[in-house]
Image 1: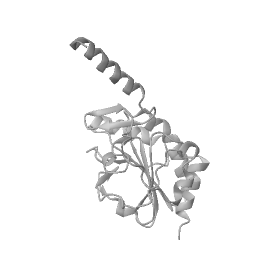
Image 2: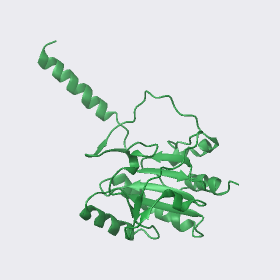
Image 3: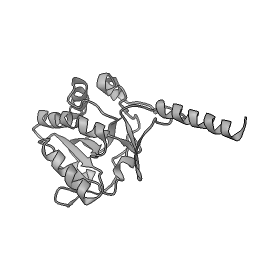
Amino acid sequence: MGGSGKGVLIGALALAAIAGGTVGTLYAMRAGPFKGAAPTDAEPAASSELARFATGPLARLETPAVLETAPDYVFKDRDGAEVRFTDFRGKVVLVNLWAMWCAPCRTEMPTIAALASAYPDGDLVVLPINVDTGDDAVADARSFIDVHEPLPFYSDTRFQLPFEFPGRGKMPQTILLDREGRIRAAFSGEADWNSAEARALIDAVLNEA
């Protein structure tokens, strides 16, 4: 096959690979987001007993059997004060990593706000962390979260946290931490976090001894 023929073939294969990507999950690069599919050459990780909640809107839920502690990473609250995940020890924490450029992130946010409203006693902390960079983008994100009460505003302007958790850069990314700060479940992509399945998962971790 000539050089031009090889180029056409390679181009067709590339388009086919893009078309076969996972819809609804964005993969973040430090240069910007793009759609794609997760690598499939790795062996699936062993799951914990929480795998029974990987159904319905949470069918792609990851529930690691080997528990790792959330990274010792500094992000900022609305006023610019430093925050770490260790600040929330003793609480069950739902971390949601989101950005304004991520359409699925914005779409699922009302369900995350509804979930936070359903647990007003504070035993569950819903922690949305924005990863936009630049003053204008962060200001837009702050305005967006303000119409989704009772959610607070946190930010990681270094755009590093999505790469510190199991999703390895996927967006949106939601992680459930237990009272000891360990990663109990992780989900990449848009989901209904006010669904019966999501509440059952959270209740199971809240009710652990």
